Image 1 (spheres, rainbow, N blue to C red):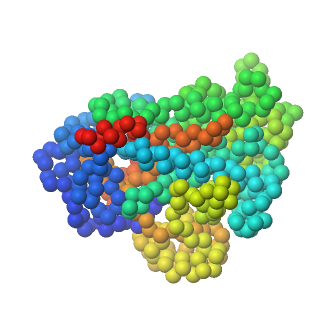
Image 2 (image 1 turned 90 degrees about the vertical axis):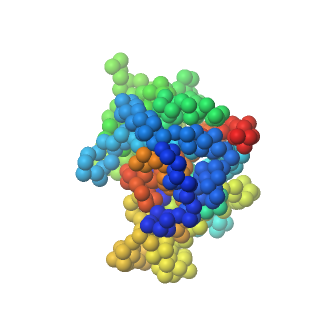
Image 3 (image 1 turned 45 degrees about the horizontal axis):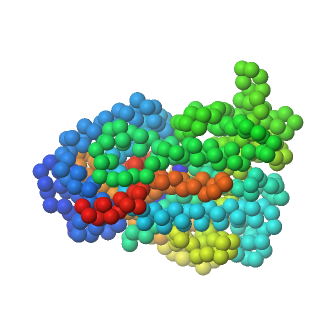
Length: 513
């Protein structure tokens, strides 16, 4: 599931005028753009374009709202014609929506990306070592670096897999780590998505459509390509195939067309040239997995599964699941089929375990974390509990196993009744919650009602771990589209932007403009 970050509305999001705004220019997109207390990706506090944004800002200032509106309509039509959509389960107007994309790209210079990339490689390396450890020797628990109770009693810890080996000792093959920026522009890790992370198809589609509709925007920049992600993912899947599989058969296992990420499932399967299957298309015989075809059963060696653990095998997990494959777990344990991501990865992206990732990096890698976490309080610690309960109106409280913007309390935007409800729930089950201070998300120019206005954004880069760790240049920039909103999740009104990573030489070119 796509994760979220919800913060209390800042002063700039309410009725107060920003102390900085661009002088009006007739017909220009940036005529009334303002910068508030949050870090703005394009303009500094003096409203001067940041060096790498200078060519784009110049082009935007020379473009009328009418022309940009025409291009935006073409972009929306292109998305609709390509069938790029997602499913919302709680919308009165229907469940199918066209993917919302804003035309103004987010730009990340090479030096910043180098830092992000190094931090993500460090993070997934430590998380994979942590997962191997907790399902085997459990050294990190015995040494008290991570509380044993926190892990062993976590709802995502799979006791059935203690002692089980996984191919190449890799648990998380595909990870989507959510990043935000603090008021000083520094990058912070909000959370790691190591179960079935979604959104990469939208990253790829955003680039394809923007090139088609706004080719002139690319003229001033050398943007690193991201279209080799499907090939890189397929390499990872083949790398973990059983040794007995000479030319491994790989499939993508989907819950079906009513899943919110079904477009992504079909998109990736098509781009990788593999079969898209559902649980009913697979059968296990003698601890081997086969796919039903018109020519009979065909052996399957690798499954890229987009089904959560609970629904993967009704013989091992939820008996009422009709999405999974009976006997799949035994076939996996026997080493006859590989799964990406592995069963049991959920304990690594449990929000209650998240505060300990920097400690994992120090413990396993003997390094300091490159990308810090957001400050996080754990109510199961008595001192933390007292602090959280005394400051509910100032904090964001999250249930550790919820996503999509649900199971949260946004303190500054909450009612007394809501805070009291959460107070009781936290006191009853403190392990089920974490709390974080209200940190501003950075803002980015976003096309709204014929002009550009600042909207809050986050970033989800995608990391692949196989023979080597590969961080795809870019990621999915998610943007809160409604005015005053800080909810970037697509199911709750968020949209997206194309994310440009500049080639190293692009930085000096931009600075010379």
